[in-house]
Image (cartoon, rainbow over all chains, first blue to last red; front, side, top):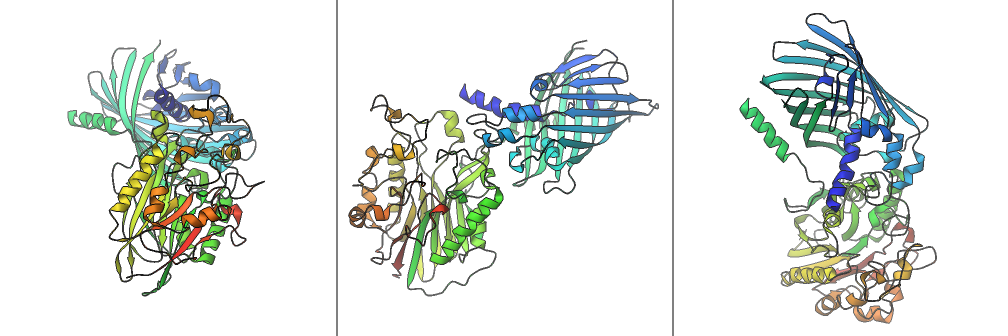
Length: 256
Length: 366
């Protein structure tokens, strides 16, 4: 039981911090039909207000680190689809919560009262192209800014894969994020999703991270999708560079 | 496509990297060389050995883990300042072979400074070898984060061979704590000493807070390893976390206790009556076999005659002095009589660590 608690304590911040609010459909410029509502085990709740506007948030994380994403689709040609993504994220309460003594103390308690109020803003564009009847390719690029009410002590960094790269903007002020995604229809109800992403923080000592994930999804029904895969992360950390290979698993439900 | 799918499933299954190094794979030692070498004499008459627990280069700061403090992550400038003063002391005392305990090589708490490399590059010692006792990608407790700390041996002469010998793990911890906890070791090296083929330097750091028979098992393991070297020349230094037999004080619960600790309350036979690691009553005899069999840098009778003068450790400093002996050097060869030093005097800045270095000289016998 204690092992389970410890694993949960490590995994929770990883999951919460690593949310890019992305799922297979969210990584492309093509939006779902209006009123479409879906949620995943580790993914955010996603709602299409209209055919051109989508809103998403991670419901569990929302109370500890409020977050919101808007996606807007633009007029598309027959070959290319365009969309923009805009995300706001406020991690201060969660960081304070995990600054504690004892088990579950991801950040040392000595910093608990020193966290400034911090917001990050991401703005990006996505361009998708259906290259044939089985493959959809998306290019994406964006820039992330952080607004901090004061200095953030560099010793508060969480030097773990996925987490470090996503919180680094609060230490550096801004960063770039770009990559590509390929969704492929394998056969019947099986799909694959390959995603390549670069996190770049110009001028920083830890200026680069590269992530590649490969997920295989089974559309069990119109409403349920099961996904299994892995993610490779190479990145610069305060201790040097390291590569991690992580398992990935998710379930997504279409509510309507 | 099937092959790709199978390969992906395989990757999924193998992709959980362990958070903690349990040292069951690989040779588990890391070798170092100074950036600039200092010439070591081909022929020497005496060799000076020194042992020192440097408390990961944070001096006497109120670290949360062992001094009732609240500090966890020490700023880089503070660590470097301490390391410089440690290097200054090493340069002043000029040991030829140095046994170091609690030295960090990649720890968040000490700004990820590789302290073995740093000390080699700031002293006259040329070669080093490191064996970790705690190597975790992430310790999800108290904000410790990534940690790699352990034992090192620095030497003027080349280190030919080295081996990390695992000491028995604590038996009084639950599975999760044990998984993330320290794995104590004995670092055995063979030095390329001029004219001597079988010259061994060994560094050890034993368990500090165990309340069961872990220390007995660890000292037995050390004893067995030394028996294999009886035909060679060995020099063993380290922090044994044990008192010499005959020590006047054996209970340090009040000295080590923090404000909120409940000390000496309840049933005296229960494990929590004493503060963890501060009562040595049941372990007081454990150093006896080493004293009997080998030559101690501070002979037992010298310690008994002047205990205060040979203390090497204290947990608090503000209103105290060194209050117990935990650090020792032994050999199967005789030391130069009277050449030992327990650096309690003004030559040693007591702010450098919670341990005093101990040194001794050996006249070379070929």
